[in-house]
Length: 287
Image (cartoon, rainbow, N blue to C red; front, side, top):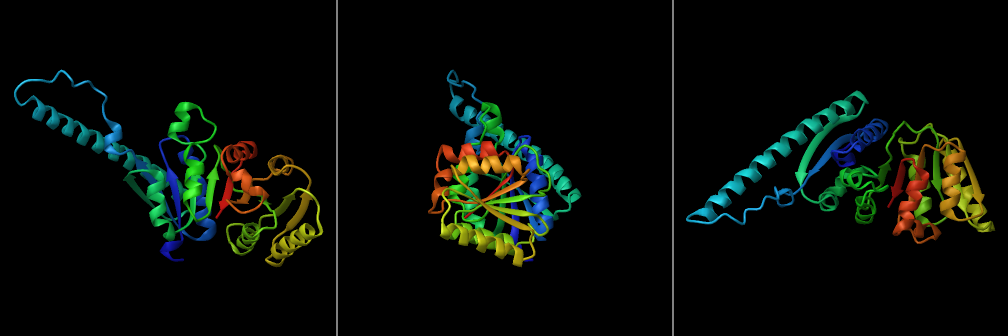
């Protein structure tokens, strides 16, 4: 396994950190891929104390104020880095206990999207929580970074929920398009899903072409040694998928992102949030 096949897990100081670490450790162990835990620190300019210094006047007051603010910024930055180091070390120990391959840690100042886009050629799989520190503060159901990051990245993204358990049943949202077919082929050849029952689900109207595509998907998985089933269920994709997740006790949902297909609408604006909220299970978004 080469270094460019690493699992990159994005963690912040929310209760999702343990869940993201557990999911990433599971993927690392199954794929035999090294794991990196990444913590993004706020930029120094974003952590200003908020004190009102407008009354600072007099000889050398401006320079003294500048020196004081610089020292305060440096102290805050040092404290944040130390807290981050302790935070990451705890998660590294958790990942080791879960069987992750050579887990490493890194923290950087900056924007999450910008930090992830650059090195994505070295990443096999991204793992992130559906909510983070900011979403906890505002009680949002879905963190604002999810759709933004999915749009920016070209590699698979595992978006996890508040709880993670090793998947036992997998569902592929299938529409017969090129992205969906590549998803089936990825599952068929990936150690990540070996030994897990896989259900392929197509929604909409029954057609001869759809039946052939479903048969192809099932045969592809069975040839690779999977216990596979396939079905076409009439109705709206979001409702059908959410219902199947509940009824079949699905642990992991796999779907294409931004494919030119009926499922495409699920990955724009509120549709993404609606499906992720209704499914309430880890979702692997494929690019």
